[in-house]
Length: 473
Ligand SMILES: Cc1cc2nc3c(=O)[nH]c(=O)nc-3n(C[C@H](O)[C@H](O)[C@H](O)COP(=O)(O)OP(=O)(O)OC[C@H]3O[C@@H](n4cnc5c(N)ncnc54)[C@H](O)[C@@H]3O)c2cc1C
Image: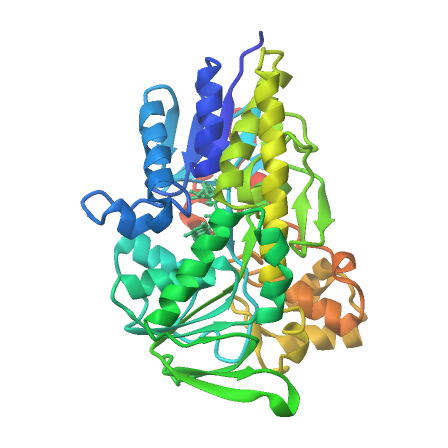
């Protein structure tokens, strides 16, 4: 067999289970993760020396967290684990990795991308004010650093994370000013039949909401944000609940606001690896194509977990293992086909659960249309909603990369990771085309910011390529 260099990007639930399956087959994968400790987002570990119990950190999921961390510890001698390694480019069998302030290249013959997700947000007046955080960001502060983003925090948006993070903050001793849910009771009722198929999940959700209510925390549903109050820091948030004349205004005093509208897959590495994408209605996003086992359209590249489409941590574990089995199959190695089939069947069930959750907590599709022109949409380049709309109207731009060229939206530090979804929603509304036709922002390396000094004294590598040249291609 030719030499095999399997590399896994991401040491979350998907990446760890993928590594476990490769090790079980006798391979020694390189595992790269920009985080300093394994576990990914849900099972993120605090820095060594910070002591909070598993129950405090992970709540209902503490056993799963302990299990996954234990698996990773047991794998350490059998894998080449490189924490603190941010992969910023991926082309032609080579990864560019920022580690300890220096660039390293890592060659691969087979690559499993298990890069997870980030928060999905839409802009609204005041969202760039200090004190406004994403839900995930607020949770990271608590899980990783043991601190809150404020003393009196309001939580807004939709999705299970909304109630979970509010609950975690309240349990950790913060004052939760309110939970402002953009979805409503009708959405949740429509999801009841589906939730019967996931009674454990439904019970946890009901418990969390019930606990918040019992502790006197106001829960509002059917909410849309109006604006954040504050000059140089959040002092409150104003929202509307309900429509038209029946609608009422809510003014919530708080010193921090955490908000998010579900998650968006981190697909940039798949994009620079040359994978084909297709549109997914449920996620309202273009996602890398994959077969049921996780094979991408590029030979030797595999996709697992939330980075290929949001499905949750349990699904990520299953998909990581399945992708690793696909890799082994492609190498001509013997795999347990019954196990592979069982994993696929479980993944299909997880997909149904995810569909139900999306029904219970739908994306507020009307939000983008109601934004005033002066709201900043792309905060890196300070591009307003009005600039985008004007470009659609005056220049007739209908496609997101055309808008990017005309307005610079998505060209800043975040490379569209924060504003890309919002830009697509606003453009679709402004130009009257359907969201899939707007397309998705073409990704360029570096996919995340890297220090400029990496390019100084940039010597060609064995293939005669400089870093700058690789970043440009
Ligand atoms: C902030 C946040 C908080 C969440 N909290 C919860 C929660 O409390 N409960 C819950 O049920 N679900 C939560 N979720 C969802 C849950 O985390 C995911 O469903 C699950 O973790 C998916 O597992 P994964 O292995 O696909 O990805 P992840 O767990 O996200 O792991 C991906 C890993 O890839 C690494 N990575 C990504 N890009 C690169 C790169 N370019 N170079 C190197 N490394 C990279 C990341 O550092 C990360 O460790 C959260 C999601 C987010 C974004």
